Image (tube, rainbow, N blue to C red; front, side, top):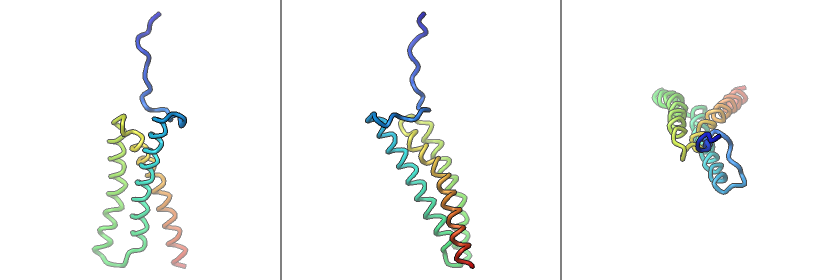
Length: 114
C-alpha cells in the first residue's frame, strides 16, 4: 500500500556530526550560543562594574530588559526559517548560559562586597 511521499525531517532532530551539512549546522549553533553568551557577559559584567551615575544606571537597567528580550525575539524569528534554525536555537540556548553568567557575576559581586 502506497502512503505517499516519504516525510522529511522538520529539523527537530539533532544533526549527524559525521555528515558535512550537519557539521555546518553545529557550527551555526555554536556561533549562536557564542554570540548570545558574549552579549550577556558584556551586559552583566558592565552592569555590576559601572560607576555610580544615575543616567548610566537607567541605561544599563533598560539594557538588562532589552537584551534578553531581543535575544528571545530574534531567536524565535530565526527558528521559524529552516536555513537559520541552528543559529536561532543557539541564540535561544544562550538565554540559559546568559543566566548562568548573571548568577556568577552576582556571586562575584557579593564576595567583593565582604
